[in-house]
Structures are given as structure tokens and as C-alpha cells.
Image (cartoon, rainbow over all chains, first blue to last red; front, side, top):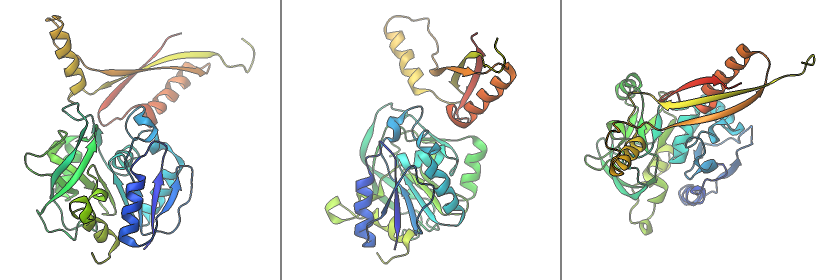
Length: 222
Length: 88
């Protein structure tokens, strides 16, 4: 079970993600620097969270224009699973691998807490270990998680079941339209989400709700 | 002008949020202004300015290039509009 972690200057959740992937798959992920133009053969590519390029210009905007993004695009076209968490989600949106954008939280405050998520679509490679409508817990930590897109794209996302995770009723921490917490591409191999599943994978974290996302995606027994 | 030598051209790109996009920062600034007793201020929308210097003689080519720069990096066209003006 091989995975790769993409590294940009300013990311700070790469160590958490590396640890989670090691614990779940048994192997350390490849660490791939932003200047790489080819990627090793892996089952899943992960862009972790943090503050790439200090959030200059817009969150994820500079990272999304680095050489490694073309390499990720090529792998994704071949069907390789891609997961972007938090800043990783912002980078996927800025690179056009997923539609829409993430704006400043409506409260203007940085939110760092556990939220309840509803599994809006349990029929994706990333969410098949959950049941439809299941409420799971997951930590969030962000300043710009307020998902927004135009009306037409929003309708398409909803009609195609591309909204995979929603903040549970009354627990939207950032003002996201339709309570969107995570979306997937049409083909179903690129998932971006604001919450951090890698921070809830073992009992010492206070729960293992996030673990099933990785075991689903990688097809391993949880 | 020397043959083949490119002139300096200065441009200003203004990026603003589209009208139907909520601007929480602009709203917070509006509240602060009202608290400072600037009571007649009704709306504030926050944006960005980029001052860009190019080596280019042809204004049409410069405009096309700046549009590409906006579309490819400076502007998130999902939520933002842009305006290009030449300063000299």
C-alpha cells in the first residue's frame, strides 16, 4: 500500500498526515517536494494542511502553480486517488482539480475545534466505510474554510452527489454554502475537505472516526 | 527610442469581489467606521491592487498579457473581478 505526501513550504500538517498514513498502511509515505515533475507509482496522493506560501495572494494560490501540480494532474487522469485536506483542499480548488473556492470564515475568526459531519454521499471510494447520513466527528482548524461557488456549479455538485461531507445541522463553523465540508470530482478519485480526518485515527485522539476515510480509500480492512 | 529596446510600461490591476459575493471583511470595516461615528458610510467592499511594471512597447500586447496574468494567477474568477489601467 503506497502513498505519497506533497510538500510545499509553509505546510505544517504534513507530519500528522505522515504519521496517520504510516499507522494505517504500515509504510511511510513518499515525501514529494513541490518542484518534482514526476511521481512514483502510488495508490493515493495526499496534499496535507497548513499555510503554503504563508497564504500569500489567496490560500493555496501559489502552491497550485508549482510544477508538482501538473504531475498530480497526470496521475489523477489515470485514476490515482488524490486527497487534499484543509490547505490541501484550497490547493486542489486553486489548481482547478476541483470546482469552487474557499473564502474567509464568515465569523472572520480562526476556528479550531471538533465538528460534527454528516456523510452526504457514502457511495464514494473515500466514504464507503460510512453509512449514508451517518454523523461523524472530525477536527477543523482554519481561517478560510467558507466554501463558495456559483449557482450552476453548486447545482451540478448536488445533482451528481459530489458533496461527500456536510457540516451537521447547526454545526457549520465557517458559513460554507449548503454546509459543504468536502467535495469530490465527477470521476470520484479526487476528494478535498476542510476537516482533518488524520487527527482522529486512534483511540488516543479520542476517536477513530477519521480512520475509515483512509481505509475506504486504500481498500484495507479497518 | 533605440531599435529593439523595450520601453517600461506601468499598469495597475484592481481586483474586487463580485457584487453577489458576501464580503465579511468589508462588513467588519463598515462596522468599525460606523463605530468611529462615520455614520453616513453605507457600504465597504475590500479589494486588492497590484502595481506591475512590464518591459513592453505595444499597449495592446501588454493588455493581453496582463489579462492572461489575471486569469492565470492574480484573480480567482469564481468570486473576483478585475480592472486593468495603464499609469504611464
